[in-house]
Length: 194
Length: 146
Image (cartoon, rainbow over all chains, first blue to last red; front, side, top):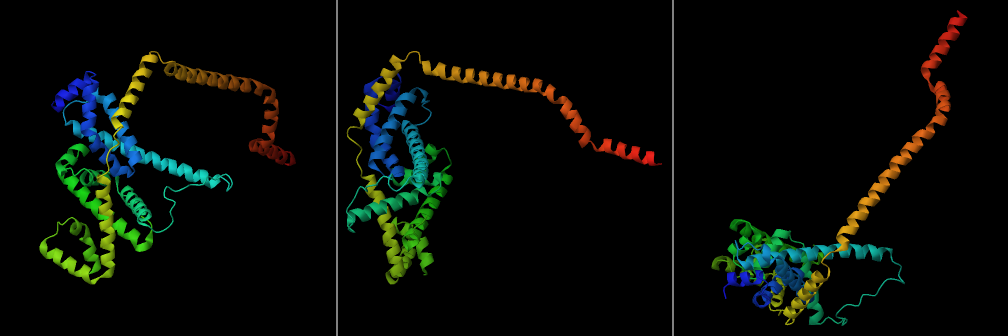
């Protein structure tokens, strides 16, 4: 079944066709979300939201671009909105902890309570460092980088998704890689800040 | 080659997109510089993490969860043909606004009317505060003296 036929069926309310769409694009959506949030659980939740958005908005899909392009856009927007809301929540949490007394403050039990310097703890720290370095990039650079590195998309397709020129994509990815390297190396030089 | 120049080429070295000549120069520097070796290793581990994340598998129950959620949305839509929330909240807000404005206008009018009692006191006070009146008084005293 071609994608156009699939879209037509979904627009008519065919759930089987929608299920096929999900199965075809779920890994792609998951990888994209993973590139932004770096957490399997969050990427799962986001993937679910993306496909629900696809289902609810399928009537608005104009078929002037590929269905994958449209789904990528939804995935990127959902991921960025999630990151923004996480930032707001972390600001609120830090304000809350500032005003809470020591008796009332909740203990945060880390996921990995093994305090020995084993590979698992080190990997988690490296993941956090990578996540912070990527989140410190400018939004457009981050989008272009994630689509290129996590989805291995060609520059032409990234340009279609981001609705920018090919040369802009090249420039964004070049700057993203340069800035990411700079941030990572600065961090590992014991500056510990981005 | 200095460290700074080598660092510029690290990402391309990892992506194997350097020319053979430049690659050889960068590699030569790295082989002789412990700091650059460490920096490159750290960068390499970051990029390896990206490759690891790419291998993560999507949740096998994703489709089931999506369908459950969609079923709930369809159920909710059927149940609430007419959503009272959409009407009540704006209506209440408009009503509260009208009440508030009416109260404000009434209060303003009431306050303005009650100012009549204080008018005489105001006029009296004005005579003490009015410099022009004092001038007339001074002039009157001077003319008297004359």
